[in-house]
Image (tube, rainbow, N blue to C red; front, side):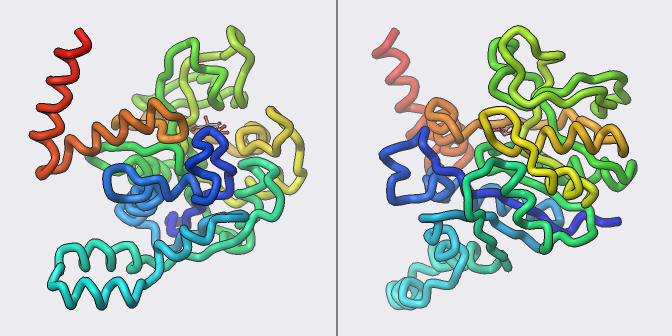
Length: 289
Ligand code: G1P
């Protein structure tokens, strides 16, 4: 079966970015000139996803407005003959996105469960908004290509430093075929020093709908929340769930340093910004040396 649907959970409170996120969803914080969530939506579309559902919560209306037409703004850009900007603004309104609300903040596993009726009985993708991946082949596309061969759930992983493993879901790999790992165990946020490897789950997943049987159990896990990783661990006992070490640079825009780094890296990929930004960075380095 083909993967055509994707879930993007966006119901988190964004406490790490307070006070910026007091009245604005964290998914709308811009990297250069685009909200972080637009990078995620673009990756999904470039990977061949046709239907996206965003799981929102209280205070997330700006996301819906962003992916909608903005008649007054478009009119005004036409009048001012700012056609390039008009194109950019229209791009974000071109995608067909569905929304559902997570009514209680019960964790990632619960957010995914909220979208079960939209997914029905097909394999689907999950993209987490805190992870932006820059790669030649979109990260999700790499996973979909693998899925097309193995027809089994597969999760994006990358190596992280040993001292960071407690911040992630970690896989215990058994065997590997190139970048694809068979997994004997999935552990959500293992205590420091207890991680079975340094291969961390990064926010890209292809899952079969069987996962909903386990999310349905609403088992409370790490941090007092319903964890997706725990349901994946149970799924792996009855159907294989693979790990795939994808190619690409991953940025954690869910924390402050990662957010600043992403802004700089993506700024450096823009023709109009590259040179002045580089010059500025060089000047800074000299000043701080
Ligand atoms: C979530 C997942 C975790 C994964 C991480 C990747 O955690 O629960 O397994 O490693 O995303 O970003 P969160 O960062 O939302 O606490």
